[in-house]
Amino acid sequence: MSADARANLDVVLHAIRRAEKAAQREAGSVTLIAVSKTFDAPDIQPVLDAGHRVFGENRVQEAQAKWPGLREVYPGVELHLIGPLQSNKAADAVALFDVIHTIDRPKIAKAIAKEIEAQGRAPRLFVQVNTGEEEQKAGVAPGEVDAFVKACRDDYGLEIEGLMCIPPFDEPTAPHFALLQKFARRNGLAGLSMGMSADFAEAIPFGATHVRVGSAIFGSRSRA
Ligand SMILES: *Cc1c(COP(=O)(O)O)cnc(C)c1O
Image 1 (spheres, rainbow, N blue to C red):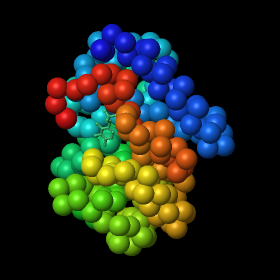
Image 2 (cartoon, helix red, strand yellow):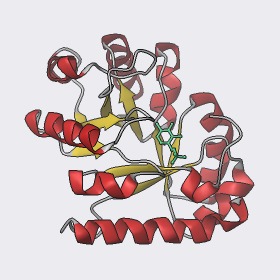
Image 3 (tube, rainbow, N blue to C red):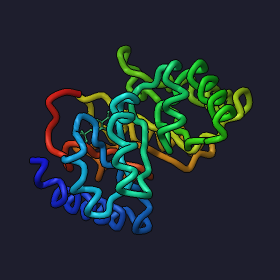
Image 4 (cartoon, protein in one colour):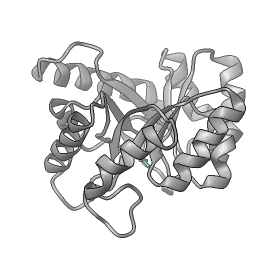
């Protein structure tokens, strides 16, 4: 299916434009993050050749292996970290990524702040919210969002751009998108990272500014 990635990209971009229009949002107000995790350079290149420049990866090490080489060939790539972050990877994450979507605990906020200071390079930051309160899932609990965003700002000096969520697989996603939008508004945050292959069009009426789409572009993955 990866041979069709370029055609798939067009389909997804059109669906985004349609959803923007239906929601009476400005064309181009939603950024498509093409999630290339598990796919290698030859699978990613058709999407780069089509002119797309915004990509998402969920593992720091995997991204380190792929992207520096691709960036040399394709200038202007904007790389998003959408997977869980360990504090021992904070330095690598700050060095490589332009946007980090998974700030979710004080230890990570502190480690990222320290690296921004040390490296003089500041990725844009989103706080991940565990809207479904799932035990195994990363993210700040809904009841702790306001306090955590405030701590990021006041205690760690971090500028937070928005919120991110991954709704539970087995539930309708709209209530989760609505909840994230409510939290973002309440905290004066403009960014909303929500919506994946199955539901990105549904996230757009709730104000998604970034949709993270993998399999609808690159095909199904053999591992997560
Ligand atoms: C893999 C992944 C996606 C993309 O998932 P698809 O269903 O393939 O579109 C989006 N967000 C996160 C956090 C992911 O890990």
